[in-house]
Length: 114
Length: 115
Image 1 (cartoon, each protein chain N blue to C red):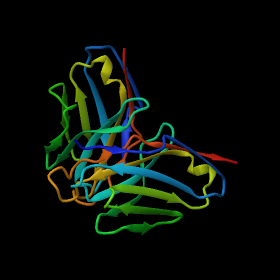
Image 2: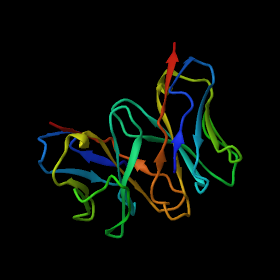
Image 3: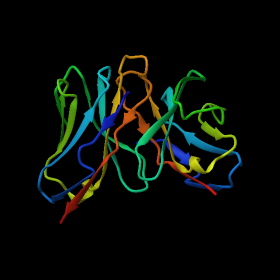
Image 4: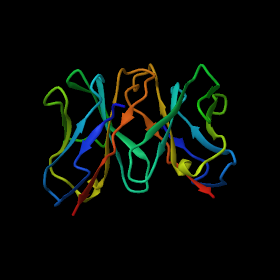
């Protein structure tokens, strides 16, 4: 069964450093998403991406964040200068279309900012 | 503002009993809802979805009920098994609306199944 994969599973970084979280969405999916989940809290939407551009983003997704699809398979989330409060689980998701459509989630990357 | 919330943070049930997990939503524009299951250390896993033109949908051992009048969603799990122990999230989406890209998640209910 096809699945979304994410690397690394755990990333530890120093405050102020840049991190890149990587995702490989399901191959025939066209819509890609990043969500985050601070420990013990709800899953929060960050950004959606379609046709090589951002479709929608939340207030959390400020100028420190960027997304990219550098090739035909990877989808990345970059945090330019990490802050302590960026520590969370980051989930990538993908779907075949936009409307009424299940989003498939990856296993997540745990980001720890020291 | 938009919000999706759950009435019970933890639900403990006996193995073999039925479980009911509830969710309230406040965005009247939402017309698509999904229940996700999240096991420890894993990403959310799709369980079942429902569109707002339906009030009930059944899957294997699971049923989702939607009451648009009171903006309430529930997940029923029949014959609960130890493998059902997890955190369950409801999520809403505007379907065809302007914010139809994103899912808005509730705060989650932990289901504990007693042997």
